[in-house]
Image 1 (cartoon, rainbow, N blue to C red):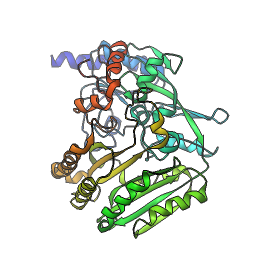
Image 2 (cartoon, helix red, strand yellow):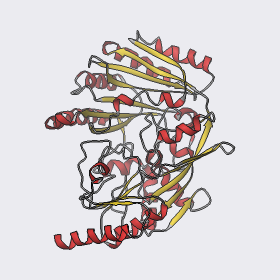
Image 3 (spheres, helix red, strand yellow):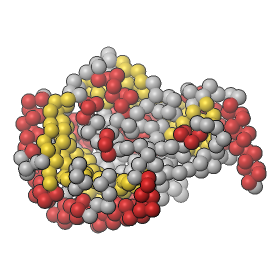
Image 4 (tube, helix red, strand yellow):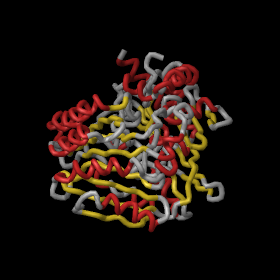
Length: 458
């Protein structure tokens, strides 16, 4: 069996090298080691074949060869998925990192980005035209992957989630066909893509809505941990009445001395003077040790967390949805910050409100449309601490379990792990039955099994 498998892998690589424009890598190639590195350095998988596609024809060919040779298939876009779903041990990886072109249509207010483009790749050309896409909070994250799973970010209140700003997508299906999905062409697939992740095919390019936005008023407010409980109580009151233009992320990170701090990350997308007044209310919640808020380019605001997303560091992520910050929940979060096991670890509370809540739960596959906070628990440590990984992972797991009794069922698909099948199904609520039916239609053999997928047992 091992000989047969090795022969099949070699044959797959040989066939692809003779039929695509891109690059085909196996473990004997000099570039292979770098090609299998992801953002999360804790992921150590060895694919049999890595196909760095040059265009969507390459993608289609790679899908077909993987199927013909019975190789597990995975797709790498931005490579920022912490759980390592972009790589498959002994499988074939469709690597889109060479497909990062972005075209902006200023008249239409849209950006078309290839499947490997990062958020930063889309933000940069839009910025010069006074436009901005709806993104997450980090520029290094893949734009397609972020969007397909949901897409929380600083413009959530004003313009909704990333999925709400997807106009259409070019998709290679499990049978190798290339289709365009939008509201009129293949609307069922378009519905599934908006929240259903990469379960239905490979998105080779997508078109996104852009919004007029010359600048945002944004920055960081940092408070000592001794102020955290009082500040978060009042923070909950303020975000409950926040205007659409104001989305305020909060959470905990370590300061320069390694001690945990409470942070608020306000982002105002309206008139700057009014924004300064609104954000000043949050500054007055306590006595911040740092208060750096000013009008800035949207891309600069997304650079606030660059120091927390270092490539090659080891990560483990857990997540919960919570309806609000109760007394007990605040105490739980503060205690987790106080007992954090690494200065590189962090907790983020993503603020979901405004325009994102005015989309009907069945309008897209992403179903949780009432106001809530997404809790992102990030355990992070340096590679030379590998022997301590269990301690850091346990910190994240302990906080996740402590929040479970008050959590909304399910969890954010982009942050859940590959074994969280039950929580993934719950995340889609009443939409899960339709997703399962569409999975049977578009990928009956589960070719895209490594993708974020709530469809086990379909």
